[in-house]
Image (cartoon, rainbow, N blue to C red):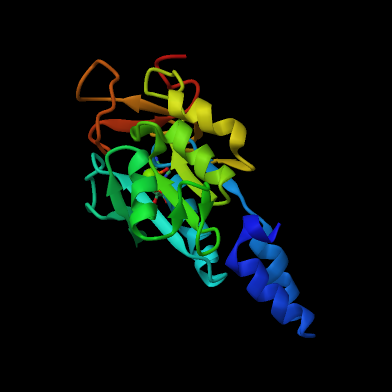
Amino acid sequence: MEEKSGRYFSEYFEKAIKNDPRYMYQAINSLKKEFVLFTGPMFGGKTTRMLSELDRYRYKGRSIYAFKPSIDDRYAESKIVSHNGGSIDATTIECADDIVDFLLEAGEFDSLNNKFVNGAPVIALDEVFMVKRAGEILPYLFKCGATIIASTIQLNSDGNPFSEILNIMPYATRVEVCPAVCSICGADAHYTEKIGGRKDFEVEVGGKDLYQPRCFYHFSYF
Ligand code: ADP
Ligand code: MG
């Protein structure tokens, strides 16, 4: 058990058995790992929710490593930024294997033994659908002990699911659907309508100029 959970459990547990019961909470809490998925359409508040979740982990004293796809250059290159202005520093990646490389270089990860060296960190990835191999790498890091906090659109603007999301969804310990407000009628919007740009439904980075959140009735593809 200690082997899997790393530094936090042993440190806190030692303090707890020296008769300071406050540390028992930290010991137990450090064993708890989550795979949280914030999903929904664009403007649904996925990134906002992710930032507040990471804030809580920061207060819990956990090490946080945040990543974002390099093609998402909407607000800032090396920050995860929400549409309402919240942000956190993040490392940009081309593909999900870069997360493992980053952790190896930081001396946090032992890939021979598939375990974390300094206790299990929290790994955050925004816009998962834009990151190739996220469907393999996020479950792998979760199995190695990391807590994963991920945010992503789940459906393309033609109404089809992204394959990366289909691969990670079964590993999620918590899925929070974040609906936006339909840009036409004000109902809950679970879909993202493409209103400009390319017509081929390949990933195209954009904001309100290209995408609008829509409810079931105002989404063209259902
Ligand atoms: P996401 O990551 O899901 O795209 P963000 O967390 O970055 O969403 O941004 C959510 C914010 O977007 C909301 O708090 C709100 O201020 C803003 N927003 C703009 N348009 C809409 C809309 N149509 N419905 C809901 N929120 C909107
Ligand atoms: Mg977002």
